[in-house]
Image (cartoon, rainbow, N blue to C red; front, side, top):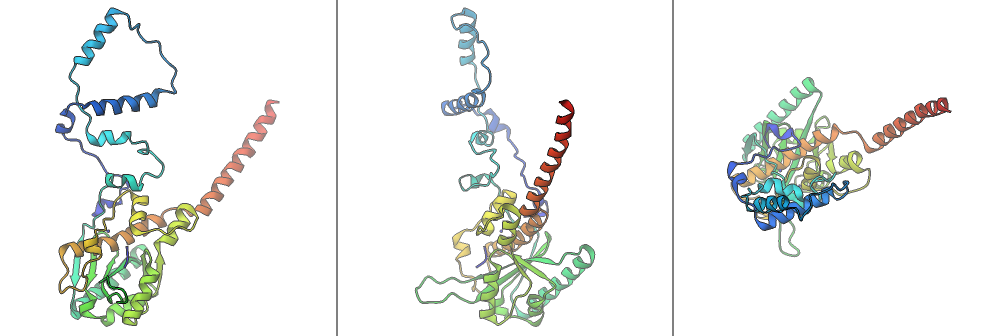
Length: 322
């Protein structure tokens, strides 16, 4: 089973809005201690300034008046920035996951479950992809599948029940193929070498699809492989959710009651449709993000070349100073 936003989801950061009620809440003693500790840590490396004499009457009076002054509490969204890893280079860590907004496909979800509906949906995808290829030179779609799991030993999982495809921010197709089967136009779409299908673990999905329906999915590319080329250069098994956090700092929600639910049901629920569409959309969107990044190997070469140029420039200058 494959490892889920509206048109403005191409932004890598979200905007935090603070309500007036958040600002007006009074500090708790725990908040004050946390603020003092953060301030002390931030200023410990700075030169110490001469402070007023504690024995001075004016100083003591000012301190007493200050302690009696009502102070307002910082909102939780601001206090969260005191976390030691708040500004780390890799902010999307497991322990900070809940800080990030959920990724959600916000376009139109086209649900098809009969052979006629799936045939029409596949033809529409082919038409749209061809138009984008002639206009933008792009012919990539996000791809994912779902099936009913089994929880009994010795019982194989169900056939692929749902296939979802997404190629932009406006529309995502969710096809209930356990009921429709594989119409001719859908087979042509899947076997087309000119339409690139991207996803995490997509090679395994293609193998299962072939076993279940005897249809060979061609032109597939694994996002995990691309991520290793672009991000670290090492072999790391990325999941769709972890890759979403790493690249765009958003959560890809994977509730078990949906992920491990009955995908062979007569009609998919709204939650199942949203889950399936978001997964396919995330695959397409993350591919667009990844392909805009330089390869780690090329980046290292460029960095090394720049350093060599800097050294070559510095050497004549050093010689002229002698």
